Image (tube, rainbow, N blue to C red):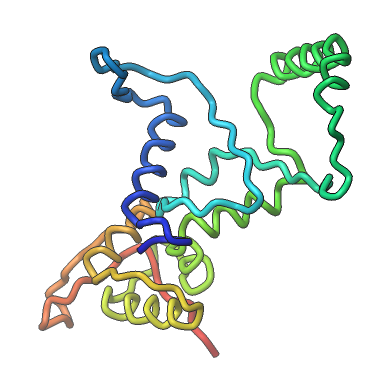
Length: 210
């Protein structure tokens, strides 16, 4: 089981699809009563939710492709049944606002993350990748760092237990996801001072606790 009753496989598939679309990779679309379509989608996804969604992306890339906006006003208990008619009456003004925003976007050349959503953006990154949070809290990344995979995996298991996080990963899966989160990481099985030929991770180490 994945998150909030959604199977892990489904969460992974959703993240993979979003990564392909937002990365403007070639995608395959199964069209009803027609042939498959292959090509690059230039669409942008807009998602509204009452709470941050937890996509599964151990690389942490997907969260960085979102622009988050926090809506701080609720209309619960003061709903306006005539809102549709009021909005329709304001169509010319709404269009002008949209055109002004389009001019600013074209002048700037890109969309920008607004300050009100910065904290949400950071939390979204934490939600999408437990491994990235673990690295930030328990590890030191650098070319001069190294640690045994067994030692790092044990630290990961303890970290998960403290936070009631459940993952059925073995060491090979953990290593792959760690490489995804830290692309500069290298694995080695040196002979020197390593009679059991244990895997050593080069480029990362554990934070030393006093």
